[in-house]
Image 1 (cartoon, rainbow, N blue to C red):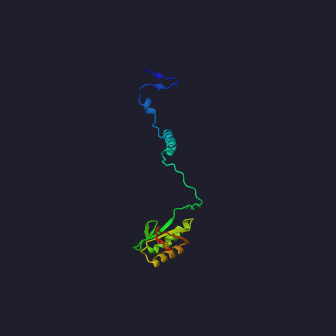
Image 2: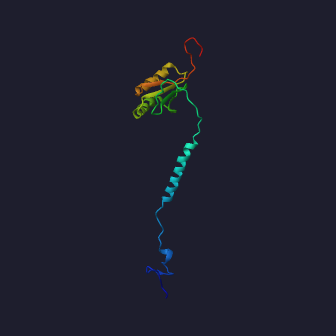
Image 3: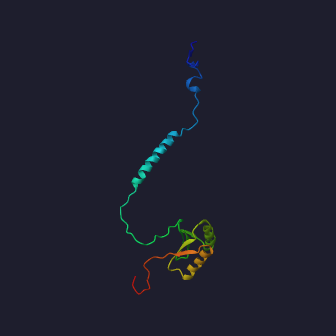
Length: 158
């Protein structure tokens, strides 16, 4: 029987437990190549993103008017349709759910501002009832949303 010894004194040759059979499969996932690819993609997007913005160079006029205050939150909007439906942020709700919902919303918001949009065909009484519900819910800064182009009441046609 011929025995081949390597430098480390290990037996080399054919047998049941030789060569590939002694190696165990690697159970870990090597994430280094994936991280390298993601970093390269991040750098590419960081360089390319400013180039993707399209704009037209204009020189805006200068005025003495004060800028409008910016809202930190998305404005809360209540809409009343001519059919009598109440929509909170475009979600229809029942009348009896309005005050509890608005009280919960008021606790979460920093701003007490709310915008009320009402169809012109709704009677004054209906709009005032909803405004009373808004006030009872804790909203005291109520903005009534309208469209421009109505009568000016100054004798001139608008």
